[in-house]
Length: 376
Image 1 (cartoon, one colour):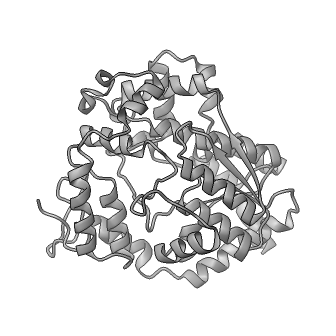
Image 2: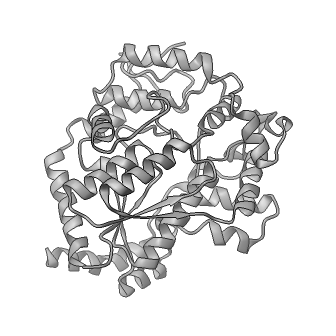
Protein backbone atom coordinates (compact mmCIF):
# COMPACT_ATOMS: atom_id res chain seq x y z
CA UNK A 1 0.00 0.00 0.00
CA UNK A 2 1.29 3.43 -0.91
CA UNK A 3 2.01 5.67 2.05
CA UNK A 4 3.07 9.28 2.41
CA UNK A 5 6.85 9.53 2.15
CA UNK A 6 6.98 11.84 5.15
CA UNK A 7 4.29 10.55 7.53
CA UNK A 8 2.63 7.11 7.46
CA UNK A 9 -0.88 7.88 6.18
CA UNK A 10 -1.91 5.40 3.50
CA UNK A 11 -3.51 5.94 0.11
CA UNK A 12 -6.92 4.77 1.40
CA UNK A 13 -7.00 7.48 4.10
CA UNK A 14 -10.02 9.77 3.48
CA UNK A 15 -9.39 12.73 1.14
CA UNK A 16 -5.66 12.07 0.93
CA UNK A 17 -3.61 13.40 -1.99
CA UNK A 18 0.09 13.13 -2.74
CA UNK A 19 2.38 15.66 -4.40
CA UNK A 20 5.12 14.75 -6.91
CA UNK A 21 7.42 13.79 -4.02
CA UNK A 22 4.85 11.52 -2.42
CA UNK A 23 4.12 13.91 0.48
CA UNK A 24 0.45 14.04 1.50
CA UNK A 25 -1.83 17.05 1.76
CA UNK A 26 -2.21 16.50 5.53
CA UNK A 27 1.53 17.09 5.96
CA UNK A 28 1.33 20.26 3.87
CA UNK A 29 -1.61 21.50 5.94
CA UNK A 30 0.28 20.82 9.16
CA UNK A 31 3.27 22.81 7.86
CA UNK A 32 1.08 25.81 7.09
CA UNK A 33 -0.16 25.88 10.66
CA UNK A 34 2.81 24.72 12.71
CA UNK A 35 6.14 24.62 10.87
CA UNK A 36 7.08 28.20 11.74
CA UNK A 37 4.86 28.61 14.78
CA UNK A 38 6.12 31.30 17.18
CA UNK A 39 5.78 29.78 20.65
CA UNK A 40 7.21 32.85 22.38
CA UNK A 41 4.52 35.03 20.83
CA UNK A 42 1.75 32.50 21.43
CA UNK A 43 2.65 32.08 25.10
CA UNK A 44 2.59 35.86 25.49
CA UNK A 45 -0.96 35.78 24.09
CA UNK A 46 -1.80 32.96 26.48
CA UNK A 47 -0.55 34.98 29.46
CA UNK A 48 -2.86 37.87 28.51
CA UNK A 49 -5.81 35.49 28.54
CA UNK A 50 -4.79 33.94 31.88
CA UNK A 51 -4.07 37.30 33.55
CA UNK A 52 -7.42 38.60 32.35
CA UNK A 53 -9.09 35.63 34.05
CA UNK A 54 -7.21 36.23 37.31
CA UNK A 55 -8.28 39.88 37.33
CA UNK A 56 -11.93 38.82 37.37
CA UNK A 57 -11.30 37.48 40.92
CA UNK A 58 -13.83 34.71 40.69
CA UNK A 59 -13.77 31.62 42.87
CA UNK A 60 -11.93 29.65 40.17
CA UNK A 61 -9.63 31.06 37.49
CA UNK A 62 -10.26 28.19 35.10
CA UNK A 63 -12.08 24.91 34.61
CA UNK A 64 -10.17 21.83 33.42
CA UNK A 65 -12.13 18.87 31.98
CA UNK A 66 -10.02 16.16 33.60
CA UNK A 67 -10.08 12.57 32.34
CA UNK A 68 -7.12 11.23 34.31
CA UNK A 69 -5.19 10.71 31.06
CA UNK A 70 -1.79 12.04 30.01
CA UNK A 71 -2.67 15.37 28.44
CA UNK A 72 -5.29 16.53 30.95
CA UNK A 73 -2.95 15.60 33.82
CA UNK A 74 -0.19 17.71 32.29
CA UNK A 75 -2.65 20.60 31.85
CA UNK A 76 -3.39 20.52 35.59
CA UNK A 77 0.32 20.52 36.37
CA UNK A 78 1.07 23.52 34.13
CA UNK A 79 -1.93 25.52 35.37
CA UNK A 80 -0.89 25.08 38.99
CA UNK A 81 2.90 25.01 38.87
CA UNK A 82 3.71 27.29 35.92
CA UNK A 83 0.77 29.67 35.61
CA UNK A 84 -0.29 29.86 39.27
CA UNK A 85 -3.98 29.42 38.51
CA UNK A 86 -6.70 28.24 40.85
CA UNK A 87 -8.50 25.59 38.76
CA UNK A 88 -11.64 23.56 39.22
CA UNK A 89 -11.17 20.02 37.87
CA UNK A 90 -14.27 18.28 36.51
CA UNK A 91 -14.32 14.62 35.50
CA UNK A 92 -17.23 13.13 33.60
CA UNK A 93 -17.86 9.60 34.83
CA UNK A 94 -18.51 7.86 31.52
CA UNK A 95 -18.95 4.55 33.43
CA UNK A 96 -15.89 3.20 31.56
CA UNK A 97 -13.11 4.69 33.70
CA UNK A 98 -10.12 2.45 34.32
CA UNK A 99 -8.69 1.76 37.77
CA UNK A 100 -5.47 3.48 36.68
CA UNK A 101 -7.35 6.64 35.72
CA UNK A 102 -9.17 6.79 39.07
CA UNK A 103 -5.92 6.20 40.93
CA UNK A 104 -4.14 8.92 38.93
CA UNK A 105 -6.98 11.37 39.50
CA UNK A 106 -6.93 10.85 43.26
CA UNK A 107 -3.15 11.16 43.32
CA UNK A 108 -3.17 14.32 41.18
CA UNK A 109 -5.83 16.02 43.31
CA UNK A 110 -3.83 15.38 46.49
CA UNK A 111 -0.39 16.32 45.10
CA UNK A 112 -1.60 19.46 43.31
CA UNK A 113 -4.01 20.35 46.16
CA UNK A 114 -6.86 21.26 43.81
CA UNK A 115 -10.65 21.02 43.96
CA UNK A 116 -12.16 18.25 41.88
CA UNK A 117 -15.61 16.94 41.10
CA UNK A 118 -16.81 13.68 39.56
CA UNK A 119 -19.95 14.20 37.49
CA UNK A 120 -22.14 11.14 36.96
CA UNK A 121 -25.15 11.41 34.67
CA UNK A 122 -28.09 9.03 35.28
CA UNK A 123 -26.35 5.67 34.69
CA UNK A 124 -29.41 3.80 33.41
CA UNK A 125 -30.15 6.55 30.88
CA UNK A 126 -26.49 6.83 29.90
CA UNK A 127 -26.29 3.10 29.20
CA UNK A 128 -29.37 3.40 26.97
CA UNK A 129 -27.64 6.22 25.08
CA UNK A 130 -24.55 4.03 24.59
CA UNK A 131 -26.64 1.11 23.35
CA UNK A 132 -28.44 3.31 20.83
CA UNK A 133 -25.14 4.71 19.53
CA UNK A 134 -23.66 1.23 19.02
CA UNK A 135 -26.77 -0.23 17.43
CA UNK A 136 -27.33 2.70 15.06
CA UNK A 137 -23.99 4.44 14.59
CA UNK A 138 -21.53 1.63 15.26
CA UNK A 139 -19.65 3.66 17.88
CA UNK A 140 -20.05 5.00 21.41
CA UNK A 141 -17.46 7.79 21.75
CA UNK A 142 -19.92 10.48 20.67
CA UNK A 143 -22.01 9.82 23.79
CA UNK A 144 -18.93 10.17 25.99
CA UNK A 145 -17.94 13.42 24.22
CA UNK A 146 -21.43 14.82 24.87
CA UNK A 147 -21.04 13.88 28.54
CA UNK A 148 -17.69 15.65 28.84
CA UNK A 149 -19.31 18.75 27.37
CA UNK A 150 -22.26 18.36 29.76
CA UNK A 151 -19.98 18.36 32.81
CA UNK A 152 -17.94 21.26 31.43
CA UNK A 153 -20.93 23.50 30.67
CA UNK A 154 -22.80 22.75 33.91
CA UNK A 155 -19.83 23.63 36.14
CA UNK A 156 -18.65 26.58 34.05
CA UNK A 157 -22.09 28.11 34.40
CA UNK A 158 -22.49 27.14 38.07
CA UNK A 159 -19.33 29.01 39.13
CA UNK A 160 -19.15 31.48 36.21
CA UNK A 161 -15.61 30.32 35.39
CA UNK A 162 -13.95 32.59 32.77
CA UNK A 163 -11.73 30.01 30.99
CA UNK A 164 -12.00 26.34 30.08
CA UNK A 165 -8.54 24.85 29.50
CA UNK A 166 -8.09 21.53 27.67
CA UNK A 167 -5.21 19.34 26.54
CA UNK A 168 -6.50 18.72 23.02
CA UNK A 169 -4.13 19.70 20.24
CA UNK A 170 -4.28 20.25 16.50
CA UNK A 171 -0.52 19.81 16.42
CA UNK A 172 0.25 16.44 18.03
CA UNK A 173 -3.17 14.76 18.52
CA UNK A 174 -4.98 12.56 16.03
CA UNK A 175 -7.14 14.69 13.75
CA UNK A 176 -9.71 12.35 12.25
CA UNK A 177 -11.42 13.58 9.06
CA UNK A 178 -15.19 13.93 9.24
CA UNK A 179 -15.56 10.77 7.13
CA UNK A 180 -13.89 8.73 9.88
CA UNK A 181 -15.28 10.11 13.09
CA UNK A 182 -17.84 12.63 14.33
CA UNK A 183 -18.93 13.68 17.82
CA UNK A 184 -20.89 16.74 16.69
CA UNK A 185 -23.95 17.33 18.92
CA UNK A 186 -26.24 17.51 15.88
CA UNK A 187 -25.29 13.93 15.01
CA UNK A 188 -25.82 12.78 18.61
CA UNK A 189 -29.24 14.43 18.79
CA UNK A 190 -30.38 12.88 15.52
CA UNK A 191 -29.08 9.44 16.48
CA UNK A 192 -30.84 9.49 19.86
CA UNK A 193 -34.01 10.87 18.31
CA UNK A 194 -34.05 7.99 15.79
CA UNK A 195 -33.82 5.60 18.76
CA UNK A 196 -37.02 7.02 20.25
CA UNK A 197 -35.65 9.30 22.97
CA UNK A 198 -37.75 12.39 23.69
CA UNK A 199 -36.52 15.89 22.89
CA UNK A 200 -36.28 16.65 26.61
CA UNK A 201 -34.24 13.50 27.34
CA UNK A 202 -31.83 14.45 24.58
CA UNK A 203 -31.52 18.18 25.32
CA UNK A 204 -31.04 17.60 29.05
CA UNK A 205 -27.82 15.74 28.20
CA UNK A 206 -26.60 17.03 24.82
CA UNK A 207 -26.09 20.68 25.80
CA UNK A 208 -25.35 23.28 23.13
CA UNK A 209 -21.68 24.01 22.56
CA UNK A 210 -19.97 27.32 21.78
CA UNK A 211 -20.35 27.02 18.04
CA UNK A 212 -24.09 26.35 18.31
CA UNK A 213 -24.95 29.52 20.20
CA UNK A 214 -27.11 31.94 18.26
CA UNK A 215 -26.57 35.69 18.10
CA UNK A 216 -28.90 36.54 20.99
CA UNK A 217 -27.40 33.83 23.23
CA UNK A 218 -23.92 35.24 22.62
CA UNK A 219 -25.05 38.80 23.32
CA UNK A 220 -26.89 37.71 26.49
CA UNK A 221 -23.80 35.94 27.80
CA UNK A 222 -21.63 38.99 27.10
CA UNK A 223 -24.07 41.28 28.90
CA UNK A 224 -24.43 38.93 31.87
CA UNK A 225 -20.65 38.42 31.93
CA UNK A 226 -21.00 34.61 32.01
CA UNK A 227 -19.42 33.87 28.64
CA UNK A 228 -16.11 32.04 28.67
CA UNK A 229 -12.99 31.49 26.60
CA UNK A 230 -11.89 27.97 25.65
CA UNK A 231 -8.14 27.42 25.44
CA UNK A 232 -6.43 24.31 24.02
CA UNK A 233 -3.15 24.59 25.91
CA UNK A 234 -1.01 22.55 23.45
CA UNK A 235 -1.82 25.13 20.78
CA UNK A 236 0.01 27.78 22.80
CA UNK A 237 3.01 26.01 24.37
CA UNK A 238 5.46 23.30 23.34
CA UNK A 239 3.86 19.88 23.88
CA UNK A 240 6.67 17.33 24.07
CA UNK A 241 5.70 13.74 24.87
CA UNK A 242 8.97 12.87 26.61
CA UNK A 243 8.79 15.90 28.87
CA UNK A 244 5.15 15.17 29.66
CA UNK A 245 6.00 11.59 30.57
CA UNK A 246 8.85 12.76 32.84
CA UNK A 247 6.61 15.20 34.70
CA UNK A 248 3.80 12.69 35.11
CA UNK A 249 6.01 9.93 36.48
CA UNK A 250 8.48 11.95 38.57
CA UNK A 251 6.34 14.82 39.82
CA UNK A 252 2.83 13.37 39.89
CA UNK A 253 3.56 9.69 40.66
CA UNK A 254 1.47 8.74 37.62
CA UNK A 255 1.03 5.04 36.74
CA UNK A 256 -0.12 3.31 33.58
CA UNK A 257 -0.97 -0.25 32.62
CA UNK A 258 0.48 0.21 29.12
CA UNK A 259 3.07 2.83 28.13
CA UNK A 260 2.01 2.52 24.47
CA UNK A 261 -1.57 3.59 25.11
CA UNK A 262 -2.72 7.20 25.21
CA UNK A 263 -6.23 6.52 26.46
CA UNK A 264 -5.54 4.54 29.61
CA UNK A 265 -8.46 6.41 31.18
CA UNK A 266 -10.98 4.28 29.22
CA UNK A 267 -11.01 0.57 29.89
CA UNK A 268 -12.91 -0.10 26.65
CA UNK A 269 -10.75 1.84 24.18
CA UNK A 270 -9.82 -1.46 22.51
CA UNK A 271 -13.52 -2.04 21.75
CA UNK A 272 -13.75 1.42 20.18
CA UNK A 273 -10.83 0.57 17.88
CA UNK A 274 -12.27 -2.86 17.06
CA UNK A 275 -15.64 -1.42 16.04
CA UNK A 276 -14.02 1.25 13.86
CA UNK A 277 -11.87 -1.43 12.22
CA UNK A 278 -15.08 -3.21 11.24
CA UNK A 279 -16.44 -0.06 9.62
CA UNK A 280 -13.16 0.84 7.89
CA UNK A 281 -10.97 -2.27 7.47
CA UNK A 282 -7.38 -1.82 8.67
CA UNK A 283 -8.10 1.65 9.99
CA UNK A 284 -5.85 2.41 12.95
CA UNK A 285 -6.48 5.64 14.87
CA UNK A 286 -2.86 5.66 16.00
CA UNK A 287 -1.66 6.21 12.41
CA UNK A 288 -2.94 9.76 12.75
CA UNK A 289 -1.22 10.32 16.10
CA UNK A 290 2.04 8.82 14.82
CA UNK A 291 1.88 11.01 11.72
CA UNK A 292 1.42 14.13 13.82
CA UNK A 293 4.42 13.20 15.97
CA UNK A 294 6.53 12.59 12.86
CA UNK A 295 5.66 16.05 11.55
CA UNK A 296 6.55 17.52 14.94
CA UNK A 297 9.91 15.68 14.97
CA UNK A 298 9.00 13.65 18.06
CA UNK A 299 9.00 10.30 16.23
CA UNK A 300 10.80 8.89 13.21
CA UNK A 301 8.90 7.42 10.30
CA UNK A 302 10.59 4.02 10.79
CA UNK A 303 9.60 3.96 14.46
CA UNK A 304 6.02 4.82 13.52
CA UNK A 305 5.82 2.11 10.83
CA UNK A 306 7.14 -0.51 13.22
CA UNK A 307 4.55 0.46 15.86
CA UNK A 308 1.76 0.59 13.26
CA UNK A 309 2.54 -2.89 11.94
CA UNK A 310 2.23 -4.27 15.46
CA UNK A 311 -1.16 -2.63 15.87
CA UNK A 312 -2.40 -3.94 12.51
CA UNK A 313 -1.92 -7.47 13.81
CA UNK A 314 -3.87 -6.74 16.99
CA UNK A 315 -6.68 -4.26 16.38
CA UNK A 316 -8.58 -6.32 13.80
CA UNK A 317 -8.94 -9.13 16.35
CA UNK A 318 -11.77 -9.34 18.82
CA UNK A 319 -10.49 -7.65 22.02
CA UNK A 320 -10.38 -9.43 25.35
CA UNK A 321 -12.69 -6.79 26.84
CA UNK A 322 -15.55 -7.34 24.36
CA UNK A 323 -17.59 -9.72 26.54
CA UNK A 324 -17.29 -7.45 29.59
CA UNK A 325 -18.30 -4.46 27.44
CA UNK A 326 -21.37 -6.17 25.97
CA UNK A 327 -22.47 -7.52 29.33
CA UNK A 328 -22.07 -4.10 30.96
CA UNK A 329 -24.38 -2.47 28.40
CA UNK A 330 -26.81 -5.38 28.08
CA UNK A 331 -25.84 -6.16 24.47
CA UNK A 332 -25.00 -9.36 22.61
CA UNK A 333 -22.41 -9.98 19.90
CA UNK A 334 -25.04 -9.79 17.17
CA UNK A 335 -25.39 -6.09 18.07
CA UNK A 336 -21.82 -5.52 16.85
CA UNK A 337 -22.30 -7.28 13.51
CA UNK A 338 -22.76 -5.52 10.15
CA UNK A 339 -20.86 -2.55 11.54
CA UNK A 340 -19.84 -1.49 8.02
CA UNK A 341 -23.47 -0.49 7.44
CA UNK A 342 -23.57 1.76 10.50
CA UNK A 343 -22.01 5.18 10.59
CA UNK A 344 -22.49 8.79 11.65
CA UNK A 345 -22.67 9.47 7.90
CA UNK A 346 -26.20 8.06 7.96
CA UNK A 347 -27.26 10.98 10.18
CA UNK A 348 -25.18 14.02 9.24
CA UNK A 349 -23.16 15.42 6.34
CA UNK A 350 -19.95 17.42 6.30
CA UNK A 351 -21.54 20.73 5.30
CA UNK A 352 -23.77 20.67 8.38
CA UNK A 353 -20.85 20.62 10.84
CA UNK A 354 -19.00 23.55 9.29
CA UNK A 355 -19.22 26.67 11.42
CA UNK A 356 -20.48 29.67 9.45
CA UNK A 357 -20.65 33.03 11.20
CA UNK A 358 -23.72 34.91 9.99
CA UNK A 359 -23.51 38.48 8.65
CA UNK A 360 -25.67 39.71 11.53
CA UNK A 361 -23.29 38.18 14.06
CA UNK A 362 -20.22 39.65 12.34
CA UNK A 363 -21.79 43.11 12.34
CA UNK A 364 -22.95 42.81 15.95
CA UNK A 365 -19.45 41.79 17.09
CA UNK A 366 -17.72 44.88 15.63
CA UNK A 367 -18.42 47.14 18.66
CA UNK A 368 -17.21 44.39 21.01
CA UNK A 369 -13.97 43.99 19.05
CA UNK A 370 -13.38 47.78 19.13
CA UNK A 371 -14.02 47.79 22.88
CA UNK A 372 -11.46 44.99 23.41
CA UNK A 373 -8.83 46.87 21.36
CA UNK A 374 -9.38 50.08 23.36
CA UNK A 375 -8.99 48.19 26.64
CA UNK A 376 -5.57 46.76 25.67
